Structures are given as C-alpha cells and as structure tokens.
Amino acid sequence: MFRIRTSLAVLLALALGAGAAGASPALASHNESVFFEGSTILLNPKTREPAIAQLQHLGVSALRVELYWVDVAPSPKSARRPTFDATNPAGYNWGGYDWLLAKAKELHWTVLLTVTGPVPKWATSTHRDFLTRPDDREFQQFMTAVGRHYGSQVALYSIWNEPNHPAFLRPQFNANGTPASPRIYRGLYQAGYAGLQAAGLNRPQVLLGETAPTGFDRVNVRREGNNALLHDVAPLEFLRGALCLNARYRRSGSCGLLPAAGYAHHAYTNAAGPSYVPPERDDVTIGVLGRLTRALDLAAGAGAVPAHLPMYLTEFGVQSKPNRFLGVSVAQQAEYDAIAERMSWSNPRVAGFSQYLLRDDPVGGAPGASVHGGTIGFQTGLEYLSGKPKPLYSGWPVPLTVSRHGHSFSLWGLVRPATRATRVTVLVKGAHARRYRVLSTLTTDALGHWSTTSSVRGASWRVRWTSPAGVVYEGPPIGAY
Image (cartoon, helix red, strand yellow):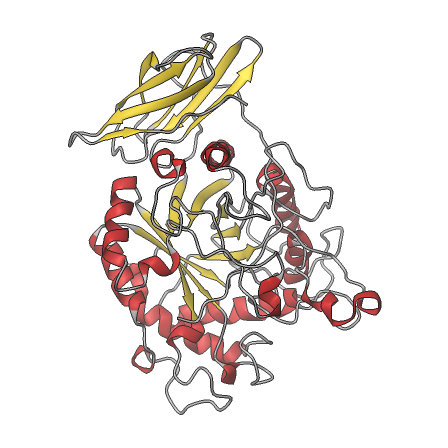
C-alpha cells in the first residue's frame, strides 16, 4: 500500500458552554454525524476483521475512507500511461477497498469516501513523481470509474485530502511565493464532480476542501530557497484562492459557483492546550471554527459557494505520548478528545466530526519530515502501536467533559453505542477519597447525549453504562477544566 502521512502544526482551544441544570438536558439542535477512520488497519486482510469487531464495540456507525488513486490505478509507477478505458471500473484493482465498503454496507454504516492523491506518475505533469499537477482530464475519468463502481455504497464523496499540504499536492507555491495549489485544486474538484455526474450521479453529495489547519499566505523563496515551496498554504488563503476571491472575499476573476454539500476541514490540536488561539488569522483550528464559518458566509455572499454551507471536520485526533513533538499524556488525550467533540457538537454549523486512527502509527520523524521523503507517525489512536488500549479506548464510547463554573460544575457526555434514549450513571471521586461514588443517574436523549450541572466538588469524574446486552462500559477518570 502506497501511504503518505502528513505532518501538522495544530492547536486546541477550550470553549465549553454551560450545561442545562438537572436531568433534562438542553442539547444542540442538530444531528452531527461522527465518522471513524481506521486507515490501513481496516484495509489489511490480517487486521480488518478484528478491527471491525472493535469498532462495533465502540459504537461506530460511519466510516471515513481515503481512496488513494495510486493504490488502485494500473502501472502507477510508470511515466507512460497504459492503454485502458479509465472510466471503466474493470480497469482498476480495488483491493481491500471493495471488502471494506461492502462490509460497511452490510453493517448499515455510512461511508464518506475521500478520493485523493498520490496519483499515478502518468497522470502528473512531470511524469516523475506522484504529486505534481495531476491531470484534470485523467482525474475526471478516474472519478467516473469510482462513481460507477461504488455508487450508492457511498453517502458522501470528498475530493482530495489536504490539498493545501505538499505531501498530497504540488506545487503549493509559485516561484514568486504566491499560492499555486488553490487553482490546481479548483480544476481537480470541478473535474471530479463532473466525473461523478458522468457516472450517473445527477446531484452528487461532494465535500469541498479537506484542508489542513495551518500554513502560510505567502513564502519568501529568496530567503528560504526551494524549502519555501514545501510549506502548507494557510487554509483560508487556500479557500479564497480556490474560489477566485481576493483578500476581502470579492471575486477576482470570472469563476462561477462551485457546487458542494459541505466544506471539509481538519481542525487538529497539539500539545499547546485547550486555550490556544493561533495568531495567524488564516489558520483554522478547533478553537476558532468561527473563522471558517465567516469565510464560507462571505464566499457565499460573493456567489462562490452555496449559502449556509455546513462544515465537516473530517479528520481529527489528539496526539499522545510517545510522540515527543506534539504528544500529551494519554490521560489528557482522553480529556482533550472529548472536549473537542463537545465543541464540534455544540456548533450548529458542524455536520460531521471524525476520529482519526484506531491504532497508533509507528513513531516517525519531526514535523515536516514527510515532504522530504520521511514519515510522520500519528499517535492519535485509541490504542498504542502494540494494540494495548489507552484511556481513550474506554473513553471514546462514553466521552465526558467537566467544566468548572464558580462553585458548580457543568458535565456533558455521550453514550455512543446507544441506539435510543438510555440511562447512564455519573460517578465522582473527591480529592482524598479512595473510591468513586454515584453522583447521579441520567436519561440521555434519543442519540445518547446528556448534560447536567452539579455543586458536588470532585477531583475526577467518570461514567458507567450497561448496554442492553449486558456489556459494561466505564470511561477513564476525567478532570475539570
């Protein structure tokens, strides 16, 4: 499997609103989809069956799958295009993707399919690498094959993973330091959308963007040399460029509206903690999603995208130790991950949230290594590389956040495996107590969400839930923020 992972400089911000008092929670007004991306563990015949069983236990009901063009195309390492009908699914080797999407259909899980580079060498402008200026016409034909092959098995399509990052698309910048990737991406998006229409999908549900959270508006090639061209483009600068808008979100060309079902973004965090707000105004992390909302609304006002475009946070995770560059403790990972999910859930413009990785990658190099041929390992998993569970493994099915408000505490949680309203037990332990005691037993809403407030002072909290089948779920200790 041809696999490239990106490095991200990413941030976390804490924005927990007060929960409703008592056992009748005031909950968000929208139904947010939560996707899970298992990456290669779900595509490997040796690991996919037990991984699916784990996801069922965790309460997963939707998958994000990245389909790498280079993985399924004929003769991907050749500079010469093979002779074949690129719109015919029979010309490709779909491999483990077929098994995974069929399994998702069997389980009635929703699938978000992100079709992305790396690409076959013969489909690039240079024919010497897998990333430089992919050919729009070739991509349109490939997307036609994808649409014909998977059709109704996919609920949402997304075009290109992190197109503002040089590990997935090049060049990011022109020789004069201005962004190049936004216009390259626009052509690919239009070609991909047209390809799905040619496959018989009249109004394909396609997400725009899939952007990485940080980057630069301009780079100084004179000062940095060719290394300047390997920076990410800042996500809002990328958005404006792809939509042909200037810095004031006014049209700077004759581009028309791009049809889209939503805007996808990767609002990652790092070890800076839950209160950090990036000073660069065109960066968008989990704590400043309002920047992206405003940008999309301004773009809609310019006629560049549909109005009130929803946001999908299609890749997210909190890095833990042993990542020595971005990792927090595994206890903090469980806390921060739940905080981020609550922030996402509380935002009415967010229609989707996604957990990246079940099991950690091998530890890689420093941030930036991937664009120089190295690897960046993500430690965002619920398990260590060895398969040993982290606290997040028990926390993800029953996430819990606790926020301090004067002398009271606001609690929010979710019973993810629940399929209807259910009862959940909240436990608390004092600073000098040996054991947890029951704080309250609450009824969730029909989707498993609950919230409450309490004046009981504690050092840590956790939740316990017993499924109708008798399986007991108990989350890790959670501190107040």
